[in-house]
Structure formats: structure tokens, C-alpha cells
Amino acid sequence: MKKLLLAVGARPNFMKMAPLYSVLAREHSFNPVIVHTGQHYDYEMSKAFFEDLKLPRPHHHLDAGSGTHAVQTAKIMIAFEKVIDAETPDLVVVFGDVNSTVACSITAKKCRVRVAHVEAGLRSFDDSMPEEINRKVTDSISDLLFTHSEDADRNLVNEGVSRKKIHRVGNIMIDSICTVAGSIDSARGDKILQHFGVTNGNYSLITLHRPCNVDRKERLAQTLDVLRRIAKKCTVLFPMHPRTRKNIEEFGIEITDDERLRIMEPLTYREFIVLEKNARFVLTDSGGIQEETTFFHVPCLTLRPNTERPVTIEKGTNELIDIDSAEEMVVRVLDGKWKKGEIPELWDGGAAERITEILRET
Image (tube, rainbow, N blue to C red; front, side, top):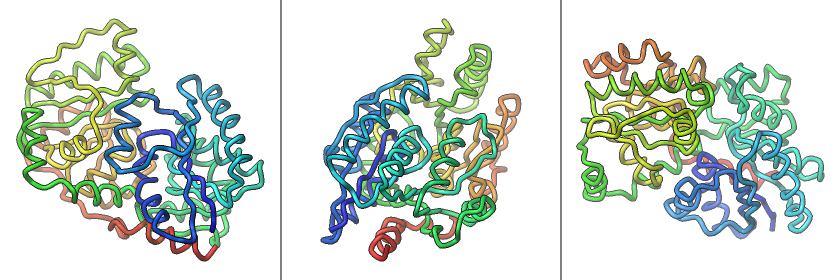
């Protein structure tokens, strides 16, 4: 029986790990062990996602908590090394591009344990993004690279990675979306919409958390002003990330919660999926949400100068915007002038099965 440590630490990781754990747990030849680094320590962004995804309690919780990139990464590495020593795994599986990803992959390799990276090959080509450094370092030392699109394969080959390591399996996050969305019938979905006082297509959904948008007072204040103006055209639901809320409070920025611009606590995964699927449009700086909206055929306005997921622009419903063009782009959506998009190849809910098949053979 192969023992696999599945290392996760943040909301996007949970959604990518859940379907793989589910498939591996049914196999007699695998012993999957969940290691939660504690990178996201807020209840709604951690424990509630485990419950929504029907995951068991993590077998190990490293309690890394917050801190600078160096502090957080170091805490995870020190604690994860002890887990590796205790568990003696055959393989460590990491997901996405957060600090937990790079910390656990480096630690595993230095302990002479093979590493598999799920969602490999994504590139924004912007080294000012911490996630880009995490992606490049993790891919450079991983033994198995599971990709979700042709451009990811191409990025790895261009960096000199052997094609033998690269396996295009599709987008594993879509596996979770298919499972969770499929478990929410229309009555339950309507109940969630009613709880938030909205109906299908009569509101927008906003998520903002990246440093480029929320870590500078002037930029954050400008963004909030734009959201107030957008709310005059279309009701805005704004589940606020703890980082964003903390900065608003520290900067002393005033923001009024009203019927048109509604500031909310972080949502459970089920709530978010229902609100995302039924939104008129989503404005975000998240990577994963660009993919989710493409799957749901919901217009996505990404408040960033670049994306590591260009397939969502080339084939999906996503477009990059800047804060000065945000209102104009919103008007385009409301006027019905947004592209329809299509779902990329292998974004079909079967990625976890394909990964498991490869793991059987390696």
C-alpha cells in the first residue's frame, strides 16, 4: 500500500485535494494522509470548507498561522519535516501555488521523498507575485507534474522539464464543483439565494484579496469607491477576505454596508458556489474563480494586469481589467455584450480519476 501525504493549507488547496482524497480512499492500494498546514486559520476559510467537501478531519494539523512569507514558510517546513519522519511516505502531493505548496515540496525533496504537483505549469510571468515564485520552485523539483491545460504543458517544456514528468489530467477543481453543485438541488439553491436576498442574475459577486489591490490605502480606497458606483447599477455582494477587512480597518477607510453594496463575512463553499453560479457577473482577483466562472459560463472581470490561467481568457468567460476600466466593463456585461465562452478540454470532473490511474503506474 502506497502512503501519500496530501499537503494543503488554503481554501483553493482544499477544493483541489478533496476529489483526489475521495478517489484514493476508495482504493486498496493507497493510504492517503491529509496534512493541513494551518496557513488559513480562519474557521470559515478552513474548517467549513472541509465540512462542505465532506473531508475527514486532517490527520495532521501543523498550526502554521500567519506571518511574513519567510516566517510562514519556515514554520511549515519545520513542522512538515516531523510529519515526514513519523509517516515515512512514498509520495508527497502538493496543490496549487500557496506558501504551503512550496514549503512542503522543498521539505519532501530534502527528505528524499518524491513529490507530485497538482496544477503544475501555470505561469503569470510576473515574479512580483509570491505565487509565481512558489509555482516555479515547486515545478522545478517535482517528480510528477499534473497539468490542466495545453499552455501549462508548454510552459514546463519551455523551462526544460522532461515531457516524461508531465501529465495533462484536466482541472481537478472542476471535480469539486461538479460534486458540490450536483448535490445542491434547485430548492436548496433557491433557499441560499433567498437567504442573501437576491435572485438569479440580479446581483454581482466580488472577491478581492491580493496585495496589489488591498495592501495600499490609496488603491484600496479607489477600488471601494468604484464598487460603490457599480452597486448603483447592480447589487454587489462582497464576502470580504480577512486580509481585506483588516486593511480597511487599519487604514481607517469608511465603507458603508447597505442594500446595494453588501459587505459579508467569508462564505461556506456551498454558499459561494450557488452565488457564483447565479451571479450576473463576478469581479475578482482570484485565480481559481477565473476557472469556476468559465465552467459556469458566468462573466468574469479579473482585476489584475496578468493571469496564470490564460485559457480562461482564450476559451472562457474571463477578461483582465484595471480599476479605471471597471465601470465600463460592467456596463458591457449588463448590456449583454460579454462573450459566452466554452469549457476547456478535460474540465469534466474526471481529473482525480486520471491522476489516480497515473499514480497506480508510477
